[in-house]
Image (cartoon, rainbow, N blue to C red; front, side):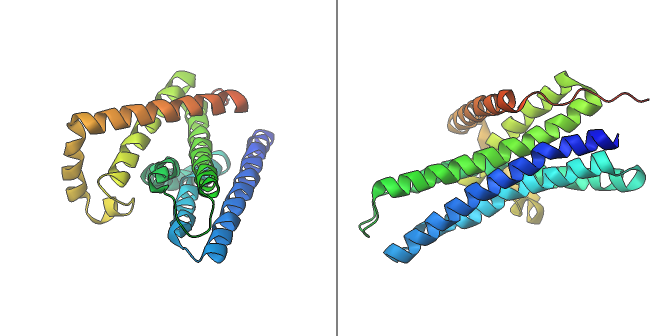
Amino acid sequence: MENESRGAEEPVWRWLIVSAVMTLCAYCLILYRVETSGNRFYAFLTWNLFLAWLPFLFAIGLRHVRLSWKGAASRGLTIPLALLWLLFYPNASYVITDFIHFTYWKDGTSAWFDLLLLTLCAWNGLMLGHFSLYLLQDLVCRAKGAVTGWGFAVLGLLLGGIGVYVGRFLRWNSWDALLDPGKLLGDLSRIGTDDPVFFVSLFTLVTGTTYAVTYVLIGKPATPRSSG
């Protein structure tokens, strides 16, 4: 069991390093843009990338608890960490929608610089979300099997699409769901109209396709562990 847990942690460290390098690169480009142009418009990307990291960190924590801890401590932390992951998971792929802010600024910065900056941030957020979803799918596969694991992944992608719609168009933050859940449920009733359904379906299709590619590149999650 100890060797299995150790082996399971190895790719997580690689993902952490890669994601940290990507985020550092994005932050450096944002800082460079602010310093050279005096325009702080794209500084909001630093906050959005920070939020994109949270589901990945919650997934790592949940994975560690489930694989390394035993008894009441593991059971007691599983549900809170899973709920926190679900609450913040849409923030990762939400960064893709920041392309809506792309515009030409007459501040001496190349439009190509801004476009590539947004692309780097969007890719970073997307991969952070995919890494976190993969970690949780792996846990479900270990406990319930591959079919249930993929059912969880598809449901997660769909809920992520709904969360992005709620954030981008209804202007809700993740923590607002805790502060005023009643109002959020009322606003969610609007998702039954055509435009939200189209957006959520298209967004889920796109993120699902890129997640499938990520899944193929990483390799399939673990099979269920035997009770013995």
